[in-house]
Length: 206
Image 1 (cartoon, one colour):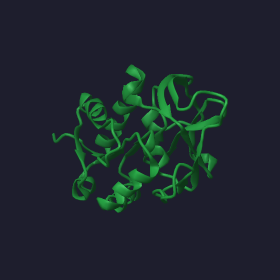
Image 2: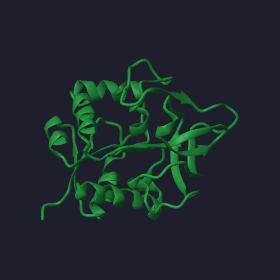
Image 3: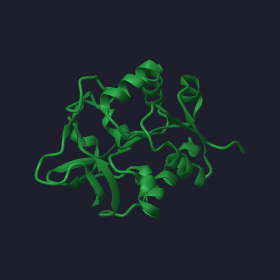
């Protein structure tokens, strides 16, 4: 039986190898790629990332990866965004001027003052809705965060989880075969790896 193939989109936004190792742990053939053809042929797609919105979107456009990502989501193949990979799903960000992917309506906003920025370290995630990628992850679990901006979707029905850091912010979205998280599952121990396990399982069952 062929292994489930997962394309990890490489747009110079970091933490690719740790995501690859997490996916491989659960039997996926995970390929770090900047190739539209690889993304289009994969069973599932992950957009990880740490970095700035503007440079990341310019890199995606220069590598002609915007349409393959959008098409993958539209096709119903499992998609997971991590950290910046969540923020880029929205229309725009206070961090820069470049338009984002526009998969979900909304804007990324800077975390308010009054606490250390970036928000770095462990924090609690409170689930608001269930999704197959989050199955078996207890409500109130702690995950590892590193970010200064947060996603603010217009459609509150896609918000899957919230976290408090000076403001209650959206820490996960989910709909159909799409999910994205502000935290780093690959840096969050066994509870974070459960999300990758679920993701690979869902991709293999399609």
